[in-house]
Structures are given as C-alpha cells and as structure tokens.
Image 1 (cartoon, helix red, strand yellow):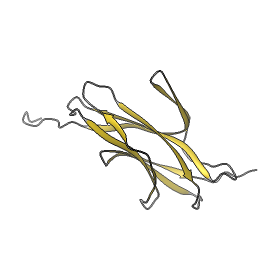
Image 2 (image 1 turned 45 degrees about the vertical axis):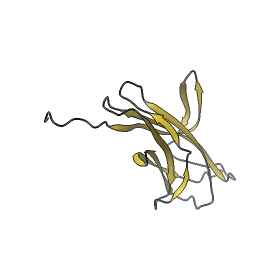
Image 3 (image 1 turned 90 degrees about the vertical axis):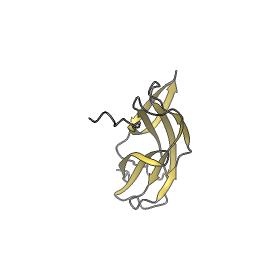
Image 4 (image 1 turned 30 degrees about the horizontal axis):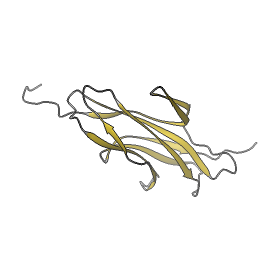
Length: 140
C-alpha cells in the first residue's frame, strides 16, 4: 500500500436485526424473537417489531456526533415509516454505537407475498439494508 494513502475513517453497520421485542438491563440489550418474516395475527391491523442496529468505526474515524435512523421502505423505495433520529458518537477509542427503534406499521396495504426493506442510515447514507417478507397468518 502506498504510504501517502491513509484511511479516512470507515464506519460500518455491523448488525441490523429485527425482533419481536427487546429489553435493556445494565446497559445491555436483549432481543426476543428474532424475525425472518412478519406475520400478523388474524384480525390484527398492524405489525409491531423492533430494529436493532450497531455501528462501528475504524481507529481513524473522526470524533463527533452523527445522526442515525432506520427506514422502512416498500419494494418501490417509498418510505412507509422512519424512526426518530438518534445521536451516535463514534471514535476509534470508543466502542460501537447501538440503537433500537420500535415500529408499529399499519396494515393498510395488501400483504400477499410482499417485501419490506429495512435500512440503517448514518448521516443520510444507507450503510446496511435487509429485506423481510410479509405473509398473512391463517387460522387453521
């Protein structure tokens, strides 16, 4: 590697996880019911879930406050819901920054085999995204 090149500070989203709920105790977050799809109960008009995101920077990351948020978009990129902005601080000496956002997405659209995209943004740049399918839950 050329000695004139130096790292400008890389920040990554190293975890983006959906769960049914979570709790925090003694500064530690526990996720309950990690989700790989959303299935509302029959008669429910909403999907409730939480999104956990973890941001980490390399040792060259400049100190300072950054703005993070979670977006829920449809297959066409239309934003359905977004979290409040969280203030996160990253620096090479500090540990990772984490955030948890709760969503109560109204079921005012057709659910049949539809995908939602969950995006983690930092300073308005998407660092990670994942797709989660929506499926109807049938009573048998």
